[in-house]
Amino acid sequence: MLDVERSAVRQRSDLTFKHNKSLGRHGWLRLTPAYSVKLVKEIIAGAPTDVSILDPFSGTATTTLTAAEHGNVAVSFDINPFLIWLGNVKCRSYTAEYARQVKDGVAAAISRTPTFLTQENWRPPLFNIERWWSSTTLEVLSAFRTALVEQFGEPVENREDGLAWVAFCRLVIETSSAAFNHVSMSFSAETAHYEVEHVTNLYSVILESVLASCGSPLMGQGEVVEVDARTIPDMGRRFGLVVTSPPYPNRISYIRELRPYMYWMKFLEEAREAGEMDWKAIGGTWGIATSRLTTWGPNGHVLPNILTETVGRIASTDTKNAQLLATYVLKYFYDMHLHLSSLPNVLERGAQLHYIVGNSTFFGNVVDTPAILGESMRMLGYDDVGSKIIRKRNSNKALFEYDVTARWGG
Image (cartoon, rainbow, N blue to C red; front, side, top):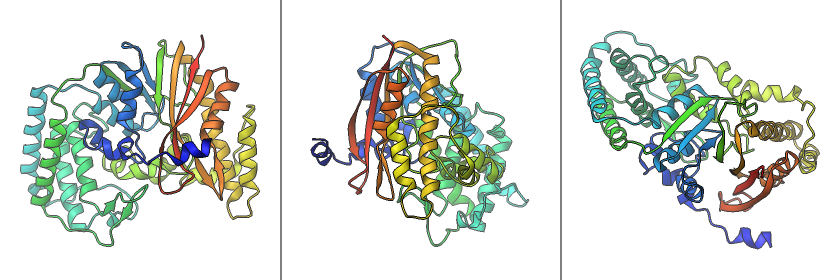
């Protein structure tokens, strides 16, 4: 029966970031794989009108912004300082006077940029940076950044004037050789050479789009705070609805894709910091995070039998790195188990949970994410645990996206 159900499921681009791109603030920056605004709206519409909403894995704040647009109060958790900054910029209401001040500041920065071209300006210590931008484009971007700092201050220090910096993040990607034709970034064979006029004109177009998306105040309130989702403390407040999409167990490193933004904004200064952040995150392995898997082991928690069996099948595969990737899968679900065990600290009794997740495969072994998470939920005392298939993720017939649901307490 399940195979028949799966065979009828389509890829549904309307439930991916492609659909979000046209939805105002949701389309500011691309983060793969971002999940669907449409899906979040449907879930919120089925909940009580005044329910408080939580997203323990904020990402680009899709849940929190959608909730605020709907008129709800919402909070998201993240450990990445750039995503916390971006989410809070997205979730603020802006006045026409503020927009005018941003435009005036940007106009002044653009007029000053040629002056700064005559000096040596700071540029991010991003590894192999010439792969991203030509020397000509780098000089212009660095000069323009210096001019923006003169007007608005460093984004890592002055977090209120965020709209000009959101537009700059878009600018550095759109002038780079990076492309989003795959799950993550790829690069063109050659970097383009952009002069001052092209860069500042493109920035002005981007800024107009960003400001236009902020024309209407949000009906509700949204906030992103720094909390490790594995160890959620009692915050003195409770939530009646959880809508989230944690990283999938597919080894995609979210910090790796965010590096250009984080370096240019000075939220990241060296590669080791990225590896440390990946190690604290759920589902990413890159740099030092991968090397630490070789010595990592679970500590004192009883885990679902289906997880133990899955990890055993992966480890026994006669393939290089089988044991490493088996440990990766184990750590992913171990961290998710820790998350689910601390989540009740902020839940109302009867709170509804929606976890948008994807399964994965390693060496032909299917990792049944909804089944493993569902078993963790049951072991930890959640009720009414279930799941449904949302969409097919790509041409791989084994990969799907699911909504895993549950309820906390009576």
